Image: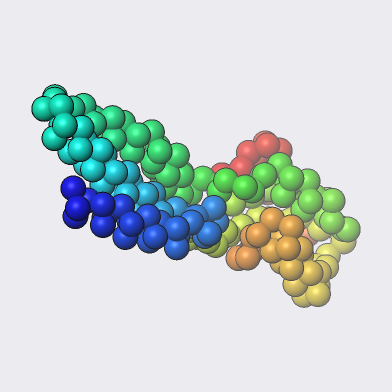
Length: 180
């Protein structure tokens, strides 16, 4: 029980250190949940050990173990879902693909948009590729640099690759709401 009590303190402090970055980084969230789970397990050991010592209820040990396991599974389910989405190149949480689409289409000289893809490159970086149709010609590098800066500022998309097309004919168009 003494070792488990020390584990509560060590794991609790370590979880606290990871707490501030857990909302923006999947790896930090995983580390935080791991350390918080370890603190929870240690707390379960202390409480169960104390109650078993006082009452002799040996059944309490597996019951507490099952309760702790259920809490860990429930607490980490979202982490697993987000990791699977990331591995499947899904649009990251916090990025509204329809807002990004509307923003891109609203740009001056943009007549169309297709092949929009938004995905996580890592736990902290988001990428975008798309084809913008500008029938009046290439809008210039300043337009592309400004667009990239706006995507980073508004949507936290820091890696944008934008292909400019002056003719909308001949491409394999996606439906307006298709985003990969």
